[in-house]
Image (cartoon, rainbow, N blue to C red; front, top):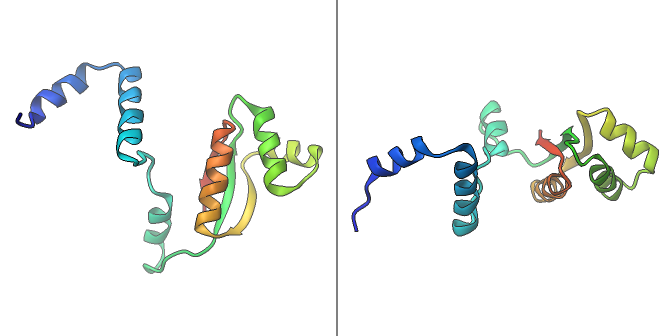
Length: 121
């Protein structure tokens, strides 16, 4: 079976946003990739080509599941309920400074799973 690029493009043009979102998720699951723009590459492009070895995890938005995000922030920072709530309400706020790339990505996944929007800087 030949790869018909024009046919696929035509089908994508006719698809709804929901269908396209489902397609992206299916492709991510099937191939183990992410459609998110790589933040680390954008940060490295701004510098002199040196790889960045520490990241700040910034809570950009709490989203609609604010209570879950507050719980996640408390777990990550060890802060009390009031401090975590203030951090979430005051978004954008840095949750963790100077984290390794692996730790930063783990914290980002944890916060995003709770419903937050997160940026690595």
